[in-house]
Image (tube, rainbow, N blue to C red; front, side):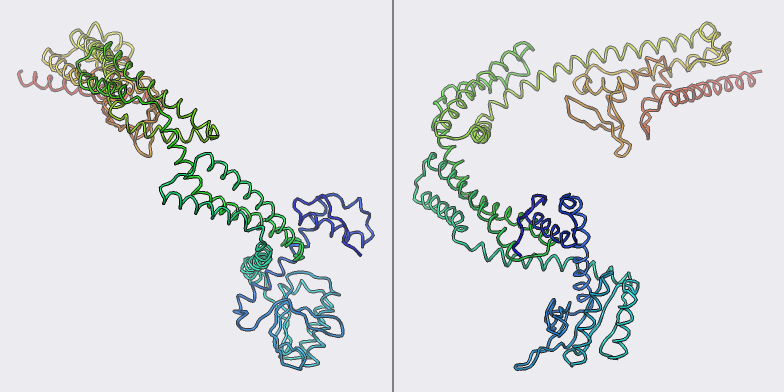
Length: 602
């Protein structure tokens, strides 16, 4: 019967052939064709039967490997010996071959990886019995995963052979654990054998002359480039571009031919379905590796095109050396005079130098682009070439760019300094406000604390009404010293960053407990700052001053380094309560000392 046409349900050519084989198997069982055209149905069936074969082979090769049985010791696989009951295919065996004598088996091993139809196994055992009786088999073993895998009649036949041929036939039960070990070891071997088998076929067909054309053409042209360079000659850019396109077309043709040859090899080998699916995947990987090797061989061509394109672009530039020299002098003067220039003059002169530099570079880039387009270079390749040329321009114009950057940096510094000076004035004003409030409470405790005492909760920093003039003076001095520590100096405006201060003041900073650093976003980039950052402490002082804290409490709270991120509102309230309690405790101690002093005077 001729082979049926390949179906259209396979994901790959091997899958198509699998579907066709499956269809005929179903027809043999008198099942209608339309009921098996469902690809899900055939794929499930394929997985079930292919998995059985793969599991069996993995068990065979894995168990053999664990027992140390190697080809060097004479072990062969899937070999056939003839019997009156039909050919006996042995899973693993060592043969004795003598001239003029029948093939004999020195040692053999049959493996069962799970349940098999009883008639199939019984037929194998009948063949084995015949070989043992005729002396054509020395020793033989049937190795199974579990005794439950053997039908009753098969188990009975195996025990019968053990009794008939003691020491020559054995039934071996390995158990689930040993079975899994063998399968795990054998899967790798099965795949390697399938791939090695395919590699032999692939290598055989890939020695065709048409699969050497692209490789040889690339090699010869790379040699031509090298020869020309050694002779001090240059291959024109247009010729290089055309040669690259021709070689690319040869590479594409090579891929098509390799794909066709691979398919021929797979058909010829008649590899089982599941292994064929695996091998097709390997073939695709192999073709991709082949393609990448050919593309890698084109690297000298790519480099020569880039070199020639750069040369063409540089020759196309107009001569602007005089303009560039004048601009360099301006940039150097600007860099020297930057500290003395006014804000407006600094910005004006920086922009003038920057604009003139951009004009010079823009003229060069336009001339380069036009020249490369005339040579036939594609826009994306032109862009890549000009990126390299721009790096050269940056190196050449480094002194000019340094003058521009120096002016920009000074402008930013002045802007930040003005902003920080404004923030310092606001900061110090807030400190003075809470200082005046605290001093007023100390001078007139009756007027400022009566309502608080009547409410049963003194405000932070307040003192009792019966406080001596000496205690009030000491408390006022403490407040003034604390205020002096909290104030910022004007010269700090140049040292501090207003962006950091604002981020902390507005709560835009986040705390990383793992690194014990604050994270702030500055101009779109993440900045990590330590806990003792001056801007953080100053922003915390301002925040507490806005809440009318006593300067003495602020000194303690602002410099405290938290182990965790800032507490939430309820926790913050508790923190403030504790600080207020600490201030009241110090005031009580002052009153007690004063009272003890009066007692000694009496």
